[in-house]
Amino acid sequence: MPQHTDEEQWRAALEAAHEFATKEPERWKASWDKLGEVMGTLFGVLNLIPAFAAPRYLAQGNPAVRPTPEQLLGLFDKYISLLDYWKPTTTNIQDHEFLRTEEATRRLRALLETWEWSLEAPAPIVQAARDWLAAYGAREPAGGWDQWMGPEEAQKAEPKG
Image 1 (cartoon, rainbow, N blue to C red):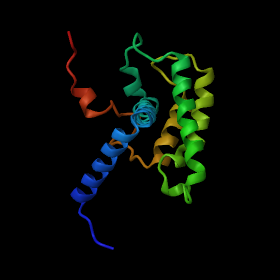
Image 2 (image 1 turned 90 degrees about the vertical axis):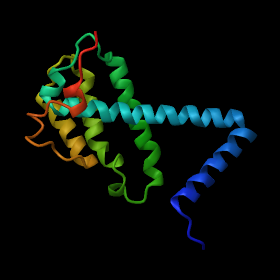
Image 3 (image 1 turned 45 degrees about the vertical axis):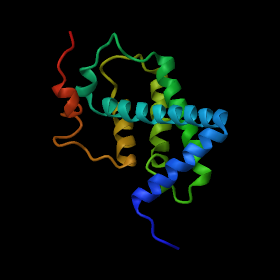
């Protein structure tokens, strides 16, 4: 079997995608929409979990700009449905960073169901978020989660006015 460079593989994938989009535009659009939904769910969870794990980061949030309880639980429900979808297709769950988070995800979702949203998460939510990050394979920040103020970009962000 011939070796292909990354660039050749990328070009072949682009050509296949173009052919699919041209021959089956409705299926292409539906696939693209679904991919956007999946990526939005993953990014939403990946952006939210560190805030729950780091009390100082969560405390910086804007109480006027936050998800409703329905949006928050809906995000976790979509994430859990992704885990349920991937599970049967994965031979070793430990090789799949998202599937490793299932227990912590379900625990965190249950805790969030009864939590009155504020900029201070109770200890069980903080711990479940930290367990999620550990299962995912995220390293604890220098100084630990209790001291972490958020991503560097968030710390350097200028207020818009």
